[in-house]
Every structure is written in structure tokens, then in C-alpha cells.
Length: 427
Image (cartoon, rainbow, N blue to C red; front, side, top):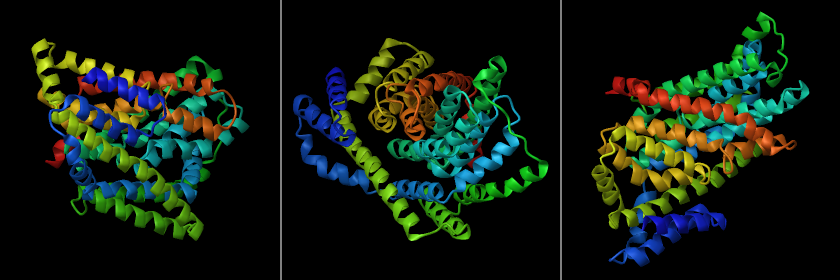
């Protein structure tokens, strides 16, 4: 059944069938050939129960928040402020790419939105200063992946929804690993540019007055982060309510900056509806597929097989990590999450691993899939923003950051407290 499902899944994806339709068709095939009961009769109830969740409302709200920030120029002023503080490091503007992506991740919740925004702001400046295109574009693609690790994160909401794990705990768990990964990116970039100075570029000179004046540009993003995440941890709002507060805050910031207009609101709403439609359709379709798999006993059979194999928890975990690394080459990240989580998560929990900790490790593996070809979405986003040069440059430039992510995965396995310390405080 699993081999049949994998073959059908890959064939449909290669044929460019939309992901949501692929999941529904796969569920119908499995029902027809492997289920003793007519599970199709339950499709209406399953799809309704999957979509009838207050938590899902947080997804379009967080997307709308990011869309408003993109269209009001907040990211551009943030980039300039951080560039004045960090461009003295070996690598120059590369560190501004990573730092701006880190800060923008704290409000957008989307990796693609983060990569596109930073790319739009940074690439013209990098071209003007003759930076090496490989590491420069690679740093933008890798920095964008932080959007799904640092809270608020749409992907963490999806994981929490599919596994019934606490969203506030997941947000808390993602903060330290996300910031540590950003720090690894900065240190790794500096070491590369010390080893090969040609991979970096010239630094820019700024007075202390310019630096301190530029800090005012960081206030809008920091305020939004405090409102959204702070309201959750203070117990004043659920993730959905916090997202709505963030949207109101983004609109007030746009009004204060005199960037709020009918065109900005319409474009933001259109972008939100397009992205939300894709995500929610995939989630609801995955629920039907997972219902079919569970009804056929696949999860129980896999768990029993792994227990009988006697591989041990960490050997099994390494097998799961290898599986995600391989699948990440070929399957889009959200699809990879919704297809595998309902099968893999129960197995990992049965092995004794914390579901919150595994959620962060999983998101890290999904981040790698965003910058590994041939389906690395952030690579294509950066190349589309770049609009010139070879796609190979972006791929080669992202490879060092894949290595740093693997190092971060090892740190998470050896030191699980990196992800579990802050959620433990919430108990």
C-alpha cells in the first residue's frame, strides 16, 4: 500500500497536478484498492471537520500581516538600519541579508514572503556594489527559511494543528533554535569570507549618528513582534487573536508611515486570499488522505514494524531524518509536511521523543528542503526576484547554509533543551 501510494503521489506531482487534488485523488485510489469499507462516503464529514477550526483562521491573518509589511516599505528601512550596524563584518552586506531576514521572520510567518522581500531590497544594492552573486543570493534564500522557524510561523501552526500540539509551546520552542541558526549563518558567512574574501564584498562606512538614527526603523517590527508573541505568552490572546492584533498593528504602522492606501489594502488582500486558498485546500485534502491511511491501519503497522525491527529510538530518528532529506529534494515543503506528519509524528512520540521538540526538528528539516534543488522554493523565489544570471549561482550559494542547518539539527538532537527550555517555563 505504501509503495503504491508513493508511486501514485510522485506520478501526479510530476504531471503537475495541483497538490490538493493530488492528495484527494491518492486518498480515493487507496480507498478503492485497499480499504474494505467505502471511506469515500465520509469525505464530506472529514473535509468539514478539517476546515471547521478556529485555529486555522490564524493562517490568513498572519499572511495578511506579512503582505501589509511587504507593501509598506518596512522591510526596506529595516535593511538599511541593520546594514549600517553589520556591514563591517567579513562579508559586508551578507550579514544584513541574514539579520533582516531574522527580524522580518518575527512578523511574517512565511519563508517565501521573507525571501522575496529581502531579495527585492538587497539584490539591487548587492549588484551595485559588485558582490559575488553566489553567496549573496544564497544568504537571502537561507535567511528566508528562518520565516518558518522564528515565531509566529505558519508552518508551526500547521504542525500544531495536525498533531494537536500546543501552538504557544511550539512558538516558544522555535525562538532559541531560530536565533541560534541565524547566529550560525552569520558566523559561517564570516568564516567563508575570511577564507575566501572574493565571496564577500566591500563594506560600507556609516557614522555612529547614522547607526543610532537608523534604529528607529526597527521599532515597527519589534513592536509587532511584542504585540503578537507577547500577547500569546502573557495569556491575553490565543494565536488566532494575536494574529488579528498583528494585522491591526500593521495597518496602524502603515497609516503612521503614510503608506496606507486602497491599492495597498487590495493588493494585500488578494495576495492573502491566493496563498490562504492554496494552504487550506492542501490541509483539508491531507486530512482525507490521512483518514484513509489511518483507517487502513498504516500508522499502526509502521509503528509495529519499527518496534519489531529493534533499531532503537535514535537509529529510527536518523532514518526519519534521512527520509525527509531525500523527500525534500522532490516534494514542496507544505505538501511534505501534511503528507508525512500524521504518519511520522505518532511513531516518533511512541519512541519517547517530545512532540514539541520533534516539531522544531521537523521544521529545520523543512527549512533545508526550501534551499535544496530541484524543488527548493526559496531558490526559485530569489532567482525570480534577481531576474538575471544563472540559477546555478543561487543553488551553489545556498549549499554552505545547508551544511549549517545539518549542524543545527545535530545540536538539537544532542541538546534537546535548546527547544524545550522555553516551553518548560510555560508549564
